[in-house]
Length: 194
Image 1 (cartoon, helix red, strand yellow):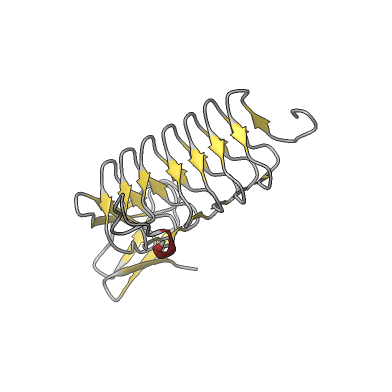
Image 2: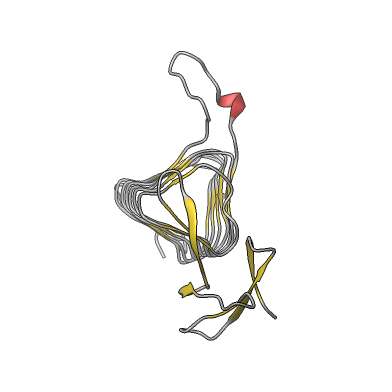
């Protein structure tokens, strides 16, 4: 607890008035949380992070050093943002032309991992538990459980909540680490089999 708060803010960081920060969250060196932003519980906000204004970060998220979450970005619970990855929020920015009224929202769904130095072009959704490899450039929506690499980013495989999946001829995949069973639907969508 710091000054009556149930979260930690390093003395070199700023949290603007009008922000919500959840219990157990840590905000480390040289970071700035702008007005209207909401950060959930038990998040780890690394060094040199900018969040906001008006950004939502779910519970148990981990945002590594040198990441900016601009207005229009929403992270659901348990999202991992690797070091120096980039979100955009205007599709065709120009310094001399204001386009803040043209923001395109980006949604990162529960449990997704975004690798170091990845770029996420605005207006797209990253699916549940998707895994974006380091340095990828995401230019379109990413399905749940997809493994994405390259520029532009392409599906190169599928992942469980914990590891990479292999599928048999019937379109079923069993995770070797946790034994969860997944199924391929229509050859393009993976879902957890209940």
